[in-house]
Amino acid sequence: MIRVALPTPLRTLARIDGEVELDLTGTVTLRSVLDALEASYPALRGTLRDHTTRRRRAYVRFFACERDLSHESPDAPLPEPVARGTEPLLVVGAMAGG
Image (cartoon, rainbow, N blue to C red; front, side, top):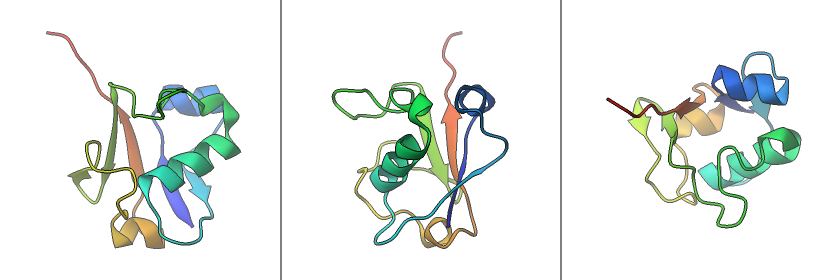
């Protein structure tokens, strides 16, 4: 069971209370997690990735095990604690401005 922690605006949009748990088989990658998340919660389609290119939106970041995974390949395996469900994948809305 993969755990995903979403920011409050996305939880509100998808009507989610707390962390999301996803049941995935095979190698756990960012792409497989996001595909499962969007399939389970269609309201999130287009919020994390562009509809057409499927690339991460500019102000969305992904963290796991105290590492920023935002610029890694979406097909790279996620850290083992995330794949086992002992650590969550964190989705964070980045801030900009000054």
